[in-house]
Image 1 (spheres, helix red, strand yellow):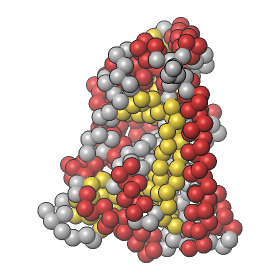
Image 2 (tube, rainbow, N blue to C red):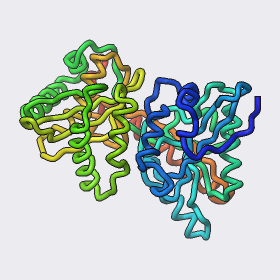
Image 3 (cartoon, rainbow, N blue to C red):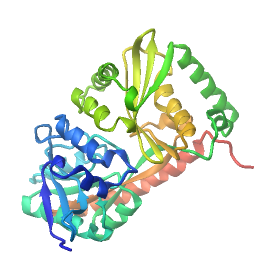
Length: 377
């Protein structure tokens, strides 16, 4: 088997069956359909600062044995693991931080495999290829974000610097219903969530859950308006194009779960989720009317309700949000790995990450004291 990697500049240049044989079925974001929807829709392209640079090692049968999806980045937007301070420090010292190499799923702060492996033995060759690309292209660095434990161990063994972050995830303790989940909460928290749900649901006429063949272009039109509104509220530019949502529904609608809240026949709010084998992933939310607690209802409570009904082990509701804690989403560490080419910058980043990891793990431990769940005797 050759261990020489080749560079592919469009996911569509790899056959879907070959890509998915490496990616597997468990994580919707690493599937060929999702990555090509990002690229084909104009959402993740060189023009938007995401120039595809996918590394591939072929097996003896001539098919990909492993793929390391990557992008040459001209900025640090849409990543959710922030390195702006590193870039600023390096450039003030006379260096050039961009372009850099990013191994991630664009605009997606969800843990998943970054090394897509039909044959796990090619993992070191893919990591070495990323390091070689950094050197040959004169890049400052390479970054692999939101890593599984297995991938974190592989990158760490290769000498990449490990960074800790924090998210809030809901875990299914074998609940049979939402009421069963509520029964696990302390009395005061349970009453607060019941009141919150009742008020949110009373503020709309109905909430529907759409997936697969139930998704229509009219639903995506409505959700696009919500997505645009959220971007405007955050003083940002929405990353995804309208076409992306159509392609998502067309290519992997069975993995999409869209909650819509209606006023009469008109959708006024929505939350988009992707369905994994054991996890429901919350991604985007938006609204055109301000209804008290509706954000929490659509993004968190409806997701938990659906996950329980469909036997999912977890709900991951995206980045940030200590407000999720009161709703049963507990703090967990998330991991990234970083290859820094310049020895001086590497030393400074390594020192920073040592101290940051201690602070993050300390905060996760401290937040555990505010868990809404009943405490053991």
